[in-house]
Structure formats: C-alpha cells, structure tokens
Length: 378
Image (cartoon, rainbow, N blue to C red; front, top):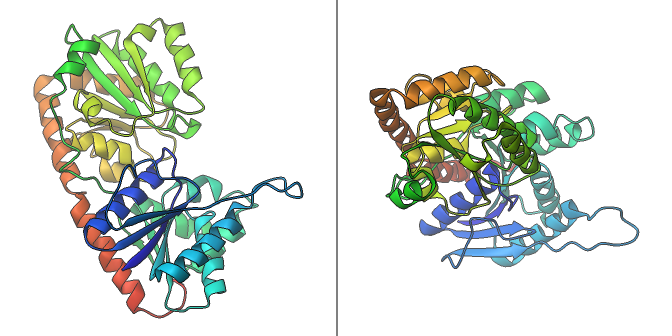
C-alpha cells in the first residue's frame, strides 16, 4: 500500500505513535509518505520505503495567521497525484482530517480513503471549543474510517459529538524488542551514587500533564525514601517546576534532562514512573516505561486504568491526590518483594501492546476500509 501519514511532528504522543507506525509499516513493505510542516521527532536518519514531504506555509500581510490547513490540503493533493496514494492516515483530527477531506474533494478519486486516528486532547480539549466543534464533528463523520487509542476515548467521542460513527479501538503500542530494560549502572552511579531510588516522569510539560504534582509527590517521597527525580521533556511549565524544586530545597536531587529522542537507558535506571495527568487517553510514555520494567503510579483518568492495572503494574489515584500517590510510591519502594513483582508485571503488561500485534491490527483495518464502500464512516 501507498500510505500518506499526517501528524504533528513535535514532542507528543500522537506524533510518536504516527511515526513509529509509519516506520513499522515501511519495514513490512508499504510505501510511507509523511506529510507535515517538519520532520517528525522520531523520524531520524534514512529509512527504506519512507519519504518526508514538507508542507510549506507563506506569510502574507493580508492574513494574520499562516493558512496551514489549506497548505496541508494542497500538499496532500500533490503527494496523492504523484505517489499514487491509497489512503491518508491522519493522526489528530484538527486540522489533519479536515485537510484530508478537502484534498479528497479536490482529487475527486473515490478510491482514496481517509482514516482518522483520535489521540485524546483533539477530542477532550480542542474539539469541544465552540469554534472548533462543528468542523471536528464534520471531519470525523466524513472520514472513511475512524480509530481511537482507547475504549475511553471512543466513548468520549461518541458522547461529546453526538455522532453515529463506527470507531475501531486500536491501542497505542511499543516496540518491546527496543524498549526493554538495559544496563544503566553508569547512570545510577553518576546520579544516585548512594543507591538512592530513581523516580521518572516524561512529558511535554503542558498543564494537562500536571508536572508540578510530580515535584510535590517527590518532595513527600524524599522525606521517607532517599531518592532522585528524573524529568524528561520540556514545555511551558518547566520553569515553574524548576522554581518549585528550589523552593522545596530539593533541586539538587531533581535532574531536568530536557527533550530526548532516545531515553531507554534513563527509563532503565528508574525504579518508579509517575503520570499524574489531568487528561490522558492512553498513556504512551507510561507504556514505554512499563516495557522497561518500571512500575507506574498514575491518575485514574481516561484510558490509564485500561493500561496501568491497579495493584499489579502499579497504582492509580484520583487527580491531584498527591498524598495518596506519595504513599503508594513509598509503599512500593520500601517493599522489595512487591517492587520486584510489579516490575515483572509491568513488563508483561507491555508485551500485550507489542508493536507487531498492533501494527497488524492497523494493516487489517486499512484493508477493511480500502475494500469497503467510498462513503464516510457514518
């Protein structure tokens, strides 16, 4: 198949999933064409069967903002014509599914299909803005196929937008051959020379991730367990978190690594992973940590309970319940037998989201949509 994939190239779950999916499909012999305004973060170096098409936007005095939706639609038309695209797979509904709809209308080729994968904040936050809701609903309904990364997100979409749409649940995935616990003694010796426990969090530091809660939890844990905190990523709340660490007097024990493309060695050094998010449709970074044998303490929102099994792979608590999360952390870190059991269970749970299994699900879904009628998913 010739597949056009459109995603946000930045540091975030939807872009990571789209990129890893494209690379995996390319390895299975499909021709993959990434279409975006920049090279996706995890698309590094040459990959056979993978081509990147840059969407160029121009600034004109007449327009206050770049017209990316239209520029993307035009690029999709161009790529479809010259690369004989069979389907567009759009990750994140706005504006990618909207652009794909426009491109399909301009191409006037019923054989080309549009599949939209919903990842979370496009539905739970962005799409519910009054100015976006009609176009979001329309773009979903006009897609030939729609997938969601969790059962929670599927139900949320159907409820929020009052649509009668067949949504396939295909979860996020992880390359379990790549994401596995590796020797990280050098990291532990450098950052935790006195055998302190290492707690880890990774995100884009947006408010929805509640990274300040991670600082608060760690501050409580350190009162009972000698430990260090590793923070991977960057974003609007990083400065606030750095300030909080200094105010608590724990900044010497908190390491901000910034954005990292590959951080399996950092995860492998970890004893516990935190994800106290306000909204999380699946929890890809938690899955990556679990694949490296790191138990997870998370909030109970969205699709997280579908991934992180309470009392087995870690614990879940209500949003903002810093005290309970800290107690859970201390419990795990001070009970070696439980900690070891959770580490094994976390890895085994991650194996259920093996990339080969999930990529095969996408392939089967592509074939289903390509073999179906030309009408939208509704």
